[in-house]
Image (cartoon, rainbow, N blue to C red; front, side, top):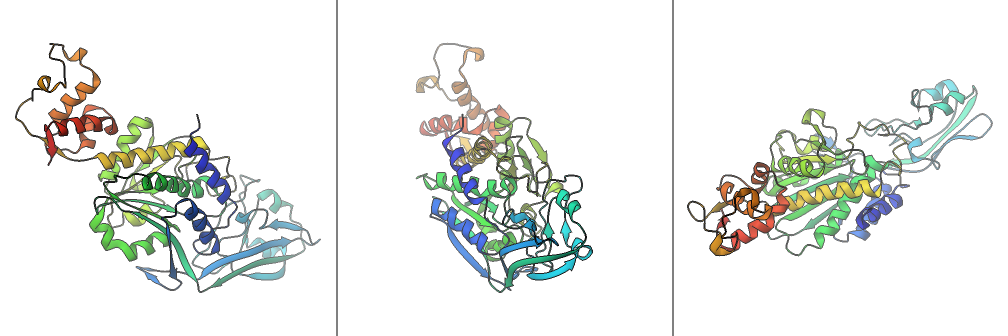
Length: 429
């Protein structure tokens, strides 16, 4: 059955799909403004063009109003208004007439997928170009073509959204997603809508242990910019983080490790996926391709892993016009949301405990087990969990590790832990 949250997220994606986003510009601002209406805790920041961010410089802002190619008869054979993928991202303005041979040098298509528009960008080198289906490209006949790209490249700013939800602790859980691709559903919109839904859920929790930092940024330049402004704080306070992308289809689940491959983010991700989606796909940091490249870079070394549905580059519609709203689904988005939500629940409840008495405590006189002499086969799972928690919570293992040892989802142990703490049999290390 489709969840209400899944339907809500899919509705957001449907509304956001037509917007032409890039690494800067009004499309990003429009996207952030829409998300902010649903998560009012969001603060939008603007970083001026020309600002330095480690080895990078924020480029001029790009905006586009229209673009088209007119064939020799004056017909629009390529039209930005029909698909915003038709224009190479960050194309500089042009209004010229040229022969087909010259135009061909600026065209991009997929010969093996003749009805699909590819997604192409040129952020850091001035260029212009069009993307079109190979079928249309093959049909272009010799003659003069008018080429128009009504765009601007001028000093402006890079925009990003940030949500900070304070908890009982200054230690933080971090979620990052990107808002820089035009009309693509799984690669672009699934991440922002899932993180926005998680932000709504987190904002409704009145007893958050951790502080939560959720950011909506342009990929690569955005994460580098954010780190250049916040790295010291993140290194001091981040407990775990997740890069959230490609989380909306319903084909599979995927996990991509941090560079360290042993952070608490890695451990909780694998733990949840084993119980939620056995058979999930595992990728090493050698197969990185999104902002985990920045968060796990040497000297940055933040505990950030990635949980996805079909990983970027591993599904056929990736970076093409085929990555439309049919690729994602309310069910797929709901599944991605729930896996991440369970990871956050696991982190919220994770702690390292130790017993307060030597040897096995007498649970019978506390009415925690029957005083009748049943053997292990007759002991219920709840009481078996009590016994196993007392056996393995020795001050050297956190609850996630204990849950792994006893083969139970960590979130199913929280009630037992609360009882044992209330009875004074377990306490924090």
